[in-house]
Length: 215
Image (spheres, rainbow, N blue to C red):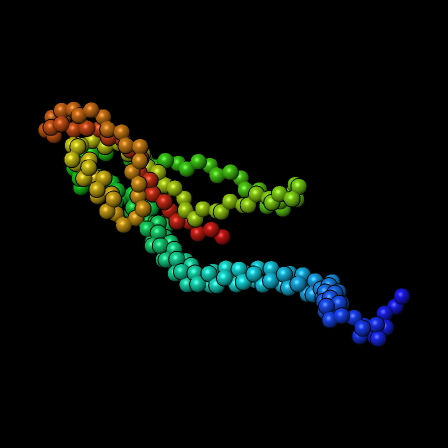
């Protein structure tokens, strides 16, 4: 049986309040399911996107703040590279450089028994560049190795003199304004030599690096 307006008027205030509360709850539920639920879901999605964008902005701001530092470090590396190139002799300077090494030994009071440049190993034949095969199963291909901008020059040296004279020779070579290394040092036992006192025979390898301009 349907309720009429007169029936509602005859209800007690308590029943009227109860009906109003039930109607309010029903309307609230309908509003939530029809409108508010979707709005809350969209709001949560937008909040997650906003947080992601905020993190990206913070990361990019951090990178931008370090750009000046990176540029400064790159410029310092360029200057260090230029200084290293200045210490690499070119092909025309190699004979004079080796002569300076020999002169350093004679100036230190040493006698050379051997001063023999080592022939470099033969270079492998260069083959025409072929395109790399397709990467298998999504794996990247092997990157090409950078070509060296210098060649190694080695000289076998044997010399005789006093221990302090030998150290003086090493010190003089270290003062030459070029990159020169003394490796594979082998000193024999001290022996008495007439007119020179106790001397030692030293064998070593003198290495320098020649700058090569690649095409």
